Length: 236
Image (cartoon, rainbow, N blue to C red; front, side, top):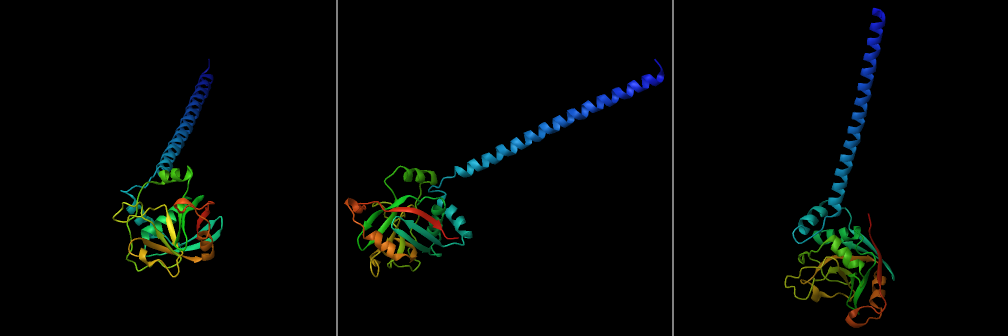
């Protein structure tokens, strides 16, 4: 075989080997890129899962709402019920209760709950229901109470939004975060001052509140016909 043929054969062989090596590198690079993307997706999924699993409790609730209220620029919520709609304005100087109400509204907690306690010419109380969905939503959000905040100068005037205590045996008047009541009494129910925390007021639709207060009730002040909160939405 001539030297030219030998040289030509050698060059072709080298080109072939280099080409195979480049192709192998490309495959390796593609595989690494795909693996890296999968790792990122797995990490992102892990982050989302951690956020979804966040549950409020007695240890973290106050710190959470302290941070949550810092950037809150909203203070109005529209409540749409089976008997009409009304708008609530929340007090800015009762930060934890305000933050709690906004947070629960954005989480959709109040949707499809009921005004489950109605006392004629006194209050309507909402945020509970005789179904399985409501306690499930509470478990998913968390179990916690809020401390009273009664010294901000707010009175229980007619139309005032306030928060009930969690239970009868509760000397510190810790508030049940999932429920609220609205005063109907004219001009107000001032014997409640100092015991419960006013954190907002009805600024539109008080006639709807009166309509709810007028429904027939049975044992335990539960309405004879359920009055639903169809939708609670923050007015951005």
